[in-house]
Amino acid sequence: MLVLTLSVSIPGFKPRECSMANAEDCEKASVLQLAVFFGALYTLAIGTGGTKANISTIGADQFDETDPKEKIQKMSFFNWWMFSIFFVTLFANTVLVYVQDNVGWGWGYGIPTLGLAI
Image 1 (cartoon, rainbow, N blue to C red):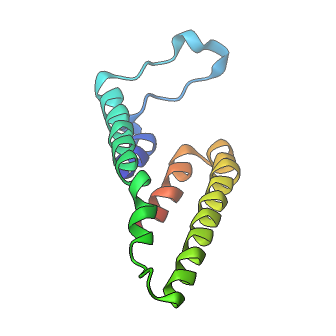
Image 2: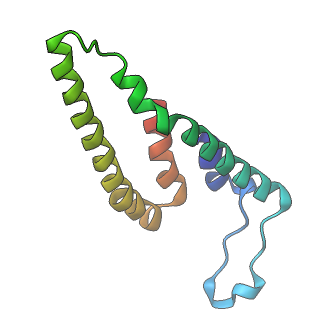
């Protein structure tokens, strides 16, 4: 995620901005710029795909089924797990889109990068 954030923030990793009035004259991304951007996307996709399917199972495995108190906590874990997924999805589809459109792509990618680091 950090490489993806850097690829949209550092001027050397992205083509120069151009006006939409004359889009034919816009500079295209270089091979290095494309390699960094798509390499970051592929790495992020592989990392997310490898953990997303397993993380709820790993979390649920921390509870002892024979202990009645932990059995109730396990149910609460899944409730909070789903609530957090839906809340973060709402945040990403509203607040982050607003930030990317009105503040900049660097901030739009920087906020989730900071969230993952924490």
